[in-house]
Image 1: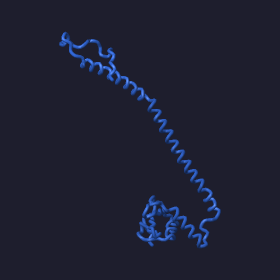
Image 2 (image 1 turned 135 degrees about the horizontal axis):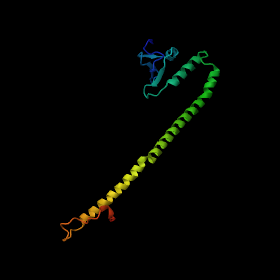
Image 3 (image 1 turned 90 degrees about the vertical axis):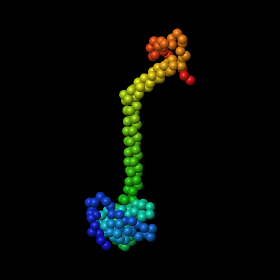
Image 4 (image 1 turned 135 degrees about the vertical axis):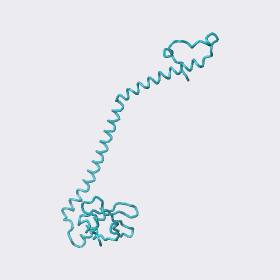
Length: 178
């Protein structure tokens, strides 16, 4: 088998191994089938592998590496000392709990910062500007209403050539339009 690829221990990309439904493992880099012991050798040489299900794309790396450890343990070799296995099993629950706590903390921080930013926007000068614009808009609507009312009035004979009342438009109260 050839493992003299450009993949080195410092390389970011993991060497991809596809697992087919017949449980065969295929190294996409060397374009050949590999065994569990071949994968173990890659890892021991410092390569990072990623084992994925060819059909679903599911990551099977952890299961495959665990299977390698089990297979080597069946051969009578003590691959991992029992004390370390005990610690690993004890801490696996802690890791899950700390991961959930970390996610919860991150989400809480995100919600707090979002709410803080929203509060800033609502209380900012922009909110005051919006209120002023709303007031100006209401005044404009009132003026337009008064002007439209003057257009609706029939022209009187005596003032047909005169301009409408000279009183300021803003001082008139608008009639309610329903």
